[in-house]
Structure formats: C-alpha cells, structure tokens
Amino acid sequence: MRSDRARLRGPLTALFAWTALSMAVAAQTASGVHPISGRRIAPVMGYQGADWLERPERFEEEDPETALNVLKIRAGDAVADIGAGSGYMTVRLSRRVGPTGRVYANDLQPQMIEMLKQRIAKAKITNVVTVEGTTDDPKLPEASVDLELLVDVYHEFRQPQEMLRHLKTALKPKGRLVLLEYRKEDPTVPIRFEHKMSVAEAKLEVEAEGFTLSNVDESLPRQHILIFTVKP
Image 1 (cartoon, helix red, strand yellow):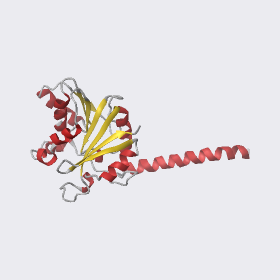
Image 2 (cartoon, rainbow, N blue to C red; image 1 turned 90 degrees about the vertical axis):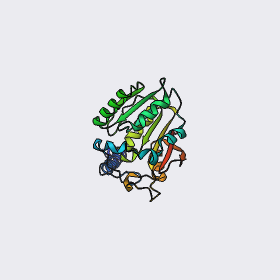
Image 3 (tube, rainbow, N blue to C red; image 1 turned 30 degrees about the horizontal axis):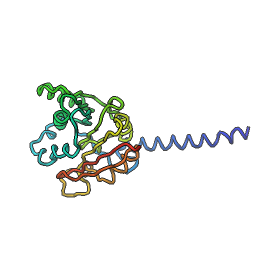
Image 4 (spheres, rainbow, N blue to C red; image 1 turned 45 degrees about the vertical axis):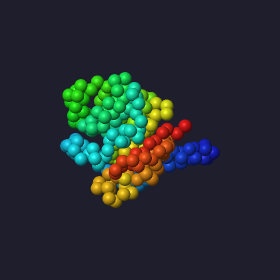
C-alpha cells in the first residue's frame, strides 16, 4: 500500500502544482495583469467611442498608408484586421489585396460589426468577410491568412495568451502577426500609459506563445510596427 502511495505521490504533486499555476495565471489575467510581463491590461474601448476611430487627425497621427507600405501587402493576399472596429483599416486593406484577395474583419462587439457591415455595403466592397470573435478566440479559419494586423488592440486583450494561440493557428505557413502599438518608451506620445506598449513587453508576451519578433519598424509618427513570425 505504501509503495502504491509513493508511486502516486509524484504525479499527483505535479498535477496539483500545474493546477495551482493555471489558477494563478487565470486570476492574474482576470484582474487585468498580464501573467508573464506584469503589464496592466487596458480596458476595451466600447463601440460608443467609434467616432474617435474616425477622427480626421488620425491620418496624420498614425499615417496608416505608410504602415501598409511597410508591410508590403500583395494583391491576392488573405489578411485579417483583428479588432477592426468601424473599419478604418479594413477598407484600406481591402484596396491593397484587391478583388482576388480577402479581408477578415474581426471584432468582439456586435455593434462594431454592424457598423462595419454598413460601411462595406455602402462602399460596395465585396472582398471583406466580417467575423465576430470572443475574448479568447478571433474565430478565424485554420491556416487561412497571410497577415494578421492588430492596430492598437493587442494591449486590450483580456485573454492574450489564448488569443495568440488561436491567431497562430489561423496563420498560413510563413504568415505574419503585426502589432501597431503606441510607443510606451516615448512620454511625449499623448496616449494613456496603459494604452501604450514597449517593444520589450510585446516581445516577452508574444514570443512566449511560439512567435519570433522578426522586425521592429519605427517609420510611424507615434507607433511601433512589430512584425512577428511563427517559430519554426
């Protein structure tokens, strides 16, 4: 009997330790703190703030066309606009991929999805598919996209690790995950601190889920362009 207990003690101890660790990680994420970096997770901007996404000065402050030029998106590519909101970047991506390409416009809020649908219908855009995701899953098809673009959205993920795992699954071989994030390293960028990210934070968190930070581009006025690929 004692030998049986001894044989069980090791696996049970490991199981209890893993369970305790999982519960601790879940508790940290639920409380708004990233379990790996300790970064405070920012609150999600509600659909009521959609006008801010369309503000006239955004073009000058964020220079979206330069960002897309850096990414060298090709006609025929399949791309995902994660946290697409009202579609500010979606329509630009639609033009880049052309009629033979596809844009998956993902958002968590059904109200944003409805705004997006109205926008693409009014513009007669036919290469965009809207996708309503959840807090832990963007609901993209497996191995479906060449590029996933997250513009000022990753820092708001309530369950960032689960989201990254699903985003990795949705990438095609040699696909890219790209974060545009306001520079936390620069105190002159007029954005609340929790809505900024440093390169070090992004690298630590995203690489923990099987990615490699392959390029950091600083062409934009206020944001990092952080390009990740999947580790081989």
